[in-house]
Amino acid sequence: MKSNPRRLTKNVERGQTVRVTVNGESVVAYPGETIAAALLAAGRRTFRHTAPGGHPRGIFCGIGMCFDCLVTVDGMQIRACITPVRDGMQVSTSTDQ
Amino acid sequence: MREAEVVVVGGGPAGLTAALEAAAAGAQVVLIDEYLTLGGQYYKQVPAGFRITSAGAEGAEYAEGTALIEKLRASKIETLLGTLVWGIFDERTLALYRNDATERLQAGQLILAPGAQEVPVAFPGWTLPGVMMGGAAQALMVSQRILPGERVVLAGAGPLQLKVASQFVEAGAAVAAVCEASSKPPMSMENALRAFGHWGKMREGLEYWLKIKKAGVPYHAHQVPVRALGNEELEAVVVAEVDAEWKVLPGTERTIEADTLCLSYGFVPATQLPRLAGCRMQYEAEAGGWVTQHDANQETSVAGIYVAGEVAGIGGADVAEEEGRLAAIAALRALKRIPADGLRKQEEKCRARLAEARKFAQLTRDMMRLQPALFDLMTDDTVICRCEEVTAQSVRAAIAEGEPTLRGVKIRTRAGMGYCQGRMCGSLISRLIARQTGTPLDRIELDTPRPPVKPIPLSALAAGVDK
Image 1 (tube, rainbow over the protein chains, first blue to last red):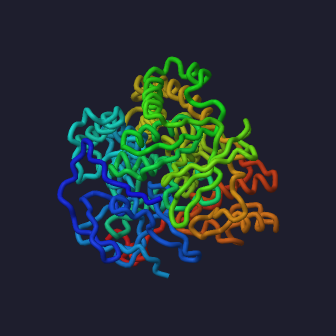
Image 2: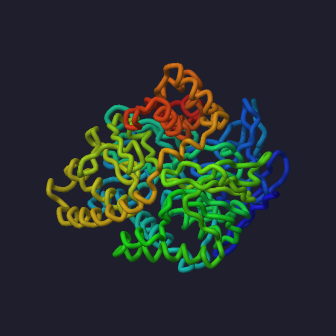
Image 3: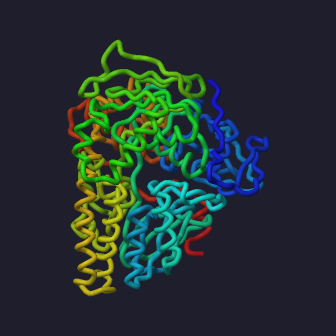
């Protein structure tokens, strides 16, 4: 079943979009949004594949405790669920190792 | 090295009231939070770049949280956001990671209010994208204003998942099922009678219940998830009926198509920081397991270090807020900012409210009490340590070969050595040890915490400290 999560619009305004790329492709993102939110809104729920086993992982705890949601930005693995996007951010969801 | 009279770690309900109480008496207060917004998990805030069109259209928590945060902004409290307290060294010296660098902060008195995490429950397929904690769904819907998925199954114990279900309905998702593990759902007559008198809570609970009923959401008691199915992401959830002890009844499995599964099985105090600081823990099954030991003034076994909120025992926001105030009052007296009997009236009122709040917290705790059989859902090939991908089979083998401790299992299998530092697998391994060896949970010691309490880049230290 294909999942297509989306941005909720009731009672909230988001401001002007910022430029974010995921694996080289542009995605819509708003200032203050977390990387996870931008990825989910773009239809991506798999954020990485585990290093030993190659298994898909996405958001689990959502509050920065489980470290499942790691994505690579500027060569570092960071938690997508609590890290906000920056204009010009380049996100990679492929494993380094 | 910089200093502060009162340092409060954690900007949720307990941290906010502690900081405000201390500042109101004229103390110099620094409040620290790892996130970029205050409010913790309870008073979720939207990002700084978002604007709420009409505050009145948001829930009661939004109003309460905003009021506290605005009071904070109007005060002299210095707030450090996006700041990780990664170590606590001798005599309340904190190591902070912020702006890609390490700073130290000397606390006169230290109030720790780092909150809780949710209880991990493992079963085959639980690592698939789409399976998440109830709190993750709330963080996405309430803070980020993102719908996590379109077809949702919720599974848990107790009343909180009614709120999450109601939030999903509000956000436009199809809620395929809400599965309550116990036979006595929150809306049962027994629980309703116990809640009698706590009108605000009853009304809140009823609101969620009516919302999900109106949307035609199927609600099932005595059901648990047994398997999450999907190739790359969640596609379906297999649920089964359980008996009064939550043991799965054979032949009762059924498959529900879903792209999202939310788990809400309660909370565990986030005790890493107080343990790092040398504070003694005690085991209280009803309060989330290992909780930080403290006296009636919220002071821990380490002089000058206090705890407030969930880290002192799961009790909810009302309990947290009163504990925050009591901790601040005790800290103010210790600093001699106020006389030894200063704020006595305030303290008495606090204690009265706290006693009342604890009464209701007890009801919620009873509804969230977990039966051990919930942790028998793990099969041999279920991943227990998500970070290092260690299966239940490996853990069971390590226990059988004579390693019935968290440390022993860790050394043998690497379980607990990953990024999350055992936050997700620790309690699961404890359950496996308990099941396999008959050791009671309060005898299975936690592993020794070491700084950093969360991973930090080497560059943060290589650049030097306090630069």
